[in-house]
Length: 124
Image 1 (cartoon, rainbow, N blue to C red):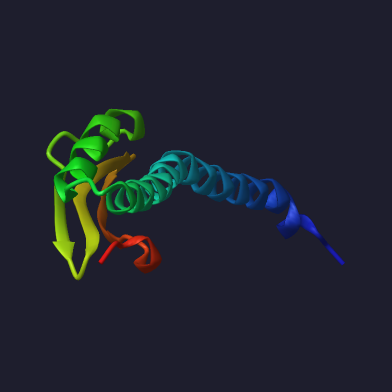
Image 2 (image 1 turned 30 degrees about the vertical axis):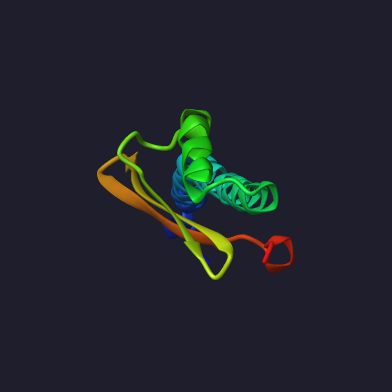
């Protein structure tokens, strides 16, 4: 049997697989920090909503604290922070779009999250 048709095929497959793996790793390198910061910002939002209701602060206090913390979490300056008081609970909604630029593609990471303070912390 002649195997002349098989020469070099393993090298080509290896290059293709490595290119795909490197592309996925690079996309993760760009996306994961943005998603992680958004997730930790959600925790911060919940914390400030709970503190505002437990300490008797107005809902605007939670919004101000989130604005002060925004640069640390790389939240864009045009983020919309909407604090509100509903049913003796503080509600905070944050909306923003963060652009992630991949080679040849731009992804808009849309963050829209609302937190409510825990019910047992509310005073009646």
